[in-house]
Each structure stands twice: as structure tokens, then as C-alpha cells.
Image 1 (cartoon, rainbow, N blue to C red):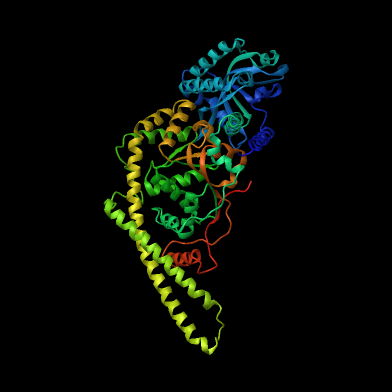
Image 2 (cartoon, helix red, strand yellow):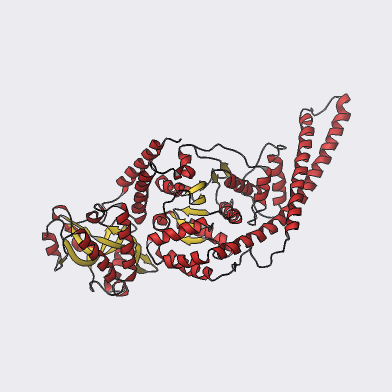
Length: 572
């Protein structure tokens, strides 16, 4: 049984680090009220357009330009802080800049401690969901939801606003009705969501054993290292993504090992390895989560999957803009009776294989693999005595040496011939697996039609609705891609809900954000940390590379040039 106290201590350490890095929320000193708080010209408008298209919104955009440390928050009410020397929004919805316009993000809410400190975690989540639903409708609906909470909690009734000088004279705890934009330096939603999830992990880990089935356990008990079999590497080589040999070895490790680290410089095919791992899990009906702190890394992986399989083969979620795009895609997918996406692998012209043909073909593949192993065994037996022969052997051993050299050369050419045949089998195997992949995608959209409809609706609903639908999609094996920054607002904190977690560009991920991600998956593949290694190029030279790599793997050679480095586990 792992020492849970060590894991709790690690979470406490990261919470302390985050607390030191976080800024003073949205608190504004009295002396800076005029610069930070901008009252809107139309209080409690019936629609967001009236607020976001105003001249005040243009001023807010100007203040945000070139200042990534600043955020804009729309808040209907203000609360006076301790001793009246500071002020902060009672509840606010953060605004994002999209295509040169100010847009509210209803999922990104900020709550004052005046409210959040007095509520349980369950009540707080229910209140957040109600606020999110109200914010999606209008500023007025957002305010009405807040009014209900003020009444339920017995807080003081908001006072009317007259001018900034009035705010400076009010006592601590006074709530003022002043709808305004707050332009301040503040922590991001990512920090707030991460802190909530780390605190929740602290609460649930001592009382639930589900985390023992997740990759989070590997931080305390690293799994034993092992090597994939030759058959597993050959199957990875026959992946429809057409990997090189070194990529196939990485894929085989990712499929068979609990925790794998894959490193390589740009151009070595790490994104293709990620795509191949997604394809393998689609073939097996298992779920995959692709995550990275860099949005472009997630988008690149999604683009590769869609290029090979067609749009909709992986669901990309994230901030409000990305969720809106996903809602449109989910609506389209929900209307499919079978897979209609087109890509380099799924072209609509796949050959037909009968079950008896598949069975016969796989028998031939395994038979060819056994013959290759026997040829390698013979070469090893011949190579051992030849390696000890001097450049000019004694005359009485010359005949035996020539005989061994002759048989070694004959056996080597026989192995090359068998490898040529194996390349032909692998190409056929890829076609077969592409057909099986098409069937898997047909099944995926067929069994998820209702869930995809719920997904389209959940994108404009509250976070709990999104949590429920993404949990259902993970259970049914639909691949999901997301930025670390949007994890808490999209995915529930459930143990081992995904079969595989893939962290791309891992060097950019802070360790604290990995804990909730590892908790959500059974196995993990960490990709990144590039090092300057030889890059293998596709083309005619791949056959020679394949022969050389196979020879290395089977013990004939002792030096291997690899495009990717592998580690089976991460030491604590």
C-alpha cells in the first residue's frame, strides 16, 4: 500500500507554491478605484451586446492590449473590503478578447471570499452552475441569480451607487449596486481551478481507493520496467499512421507500459506517435485524453488525427470559443448513422476482408515472424565463432572459416529476403487495420448519437452538465483533447476515467497541474523534452533503416541510431 501521507504532503507543497505565486485576487485599493473600476453606461442591460459593443468596451480593450497580466471582469455588485480601504467585485464573470472584440466567458467566474468562504463545496458548485446559466442569458439574468443568493445568505441589500467618492466613505462589508468592468491584474482561471482540484484531491484521497487504479499511484510506486515483445512492435509498425521503426517501438511502449516517457527533437515524429496511440486505442475501444499547457500543441495533435481519419475522430474542448466550435461539430456528428469523415487513412475505398481471410493472413504473419526469429538465431550462432577469428586464421581452420562465412552470407541474404516479405505483409496488415479502424469509427458514432446531442447542448450549459457528458464519452472510448488551462471547467475529477493520458510538450507543464491529470487516467505517456538525435526520413531509405533496426533489436548489431528515446517510468 503506497504511503498516502507523502502524496498529501506533495499536494500541500504545490498548494503553498501556488499561494505564493497568486496575486491579491481582484482587490483594488481605494486610491486606484477611478483607474480600475469603469461603471457601464447601461446598468443591468437586457443583452450582452449592449454592454460589449459600447464605447466603454472599446476602452477596456485598449487597456488590455499588450498586457497579458491584466484581466477584465464584469461585475454587477461591489463589496467594500476591510476598513474600507479596498474594494472588490462580489461576483464577476471574466471577459476574454476574441478577434479584437470583448467576449464574456460564463464558465470563468470569480467569487469574493465574502460568499465562497461561507459555503460548502457542494453548495458552491451548485451556485457556480446557476451563475453560469444566468451569465449565458444576459447581464440582467446574471444579476437576478446573484440577488437570490444575497437573499438566501442573509447579506445586506445592495445600496445604490452615486459616485466614486461615496464608495470611499462606506463601511466594511457594504454591497453597492454598481455594474462595472474591472480592469486589474489578477490570477487566471487556470490557477483557481487547479487550486480547487488540488484541495478536492486532499479531501477524497484518504477516503476513496479509486486513485490506486490511476497513474497518480506511480508517483509513489514507479512501475517495473519491461520491453515490448517483437509481435507488439510489429503490430505497432502496422499502425495505419505509418510509423517508422523507432516510432513503432515508442508506440509499443505506450501501449504496454503503465508509464512511458518519449523524448525527441522537432521532426522526429512525436505527433505521429501520439496519433498512432489514439488509433490503437480506437481499435481497442479504449479512451484517450490528450492534454498540454500549450494550445498549439493540442491543436497540432488534433490536426494530425483529423488529417488521417477525418474531422470528428477526436473531440477538442477548452475555452468558450473552442466549446462553441465543438457544439457545432457534435451536432453534425450526432446526425451520422456511420462514419462520414474523410482522411488519408479513411478514404472510402478500403478493401473488403472476410473473417476467414483475416484469420489466414494473421497465421501467415505469425509464421513469418517465427521464421525471422529462427534466421536470427542461426546468424547469432554463426557470428559468435566468426567474431573470434583473427584477420589471418591458421591454415588448418581456413576451410571451416570459409564454410562459416559462406553460411553466414547465405543466411544473411535469406533474412533480408524474409524481411522484404515481412514489409509486404506489414503493408497488407496496415490496410486490414485501416478497415478495422473504419468499423471502429462507425461503431463510435453509432453508440454515441444521443451522447453527442447532449454534448452539443452541454457546451452552452453549466460545468456539471459538461462533466457528465464528457464522463459518458470517456466511458464509451471517444478520444478527447484539451488544454491544461481548461481541465476543471470541462472534465470531472474522476479516478481512472481514461485508459491513457498523453501529455504533450511536457516541459511546459508545471508539476502541480499533472496531479489531477494523472488521477484521471490509468496509464500515462509523457512526450517532450527534446534532445538532438538523428531524425529518420520517410522514403526508400526506410527499408534499410528497418533492416538495421531489426538487426539491432535481434542482437546482430550492437549500435542503434534512434529518433526517439524511451523511458518506461519516471523515478520519484
